[in-house]
Image (cartoon, rainbow, N blue to C red; front, side, top):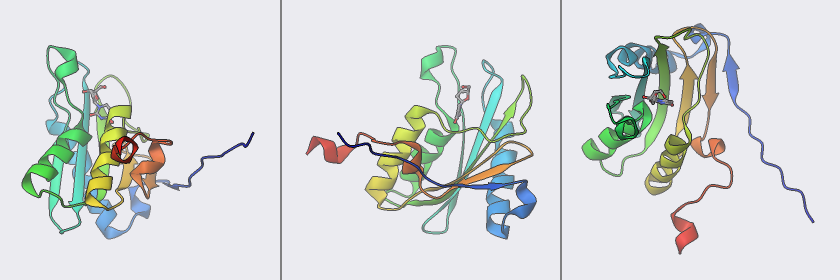
Length: 161
Ligand code: THU
């Protein structure tokens, strides 16, 4: 029997003020875009804003539906947009923020499991690691260098070869 470990490091900043200029821009835009999310059921508005490897930027917000499972997260809205406008182009960095209409928005929240799976496929097919910036409307900021860190032992296309 062998024990295996999975661990990864990520950076924790006290606030947006500690980030470099480009990351400030991406996070500020993610915070801004969360305002236009369509989330009348959860009241939890999520905004994502990314810089692609080709230098272009794209945004995404969560889009809910009266039939709840039909809703889509901000991250996957962004990936669909990026992939539709710029097929095959990697995401360099994505900033994700949120505005919680039911409470505070002062700490980073992490992408859901489906989005983690989608990030993994996106970065595998574009052959480019996705850097993730997480923060609420204020407060601490997490920076994760590779989206795959969020999904240990992931299932991917290679497993079906
Ligand atoms: N949501 C996102 O858009 N991204 C996340 O990372 C977590 C959750 C959305 C889905 C749903 O519309 C609302 O937030 C509450 O779960």
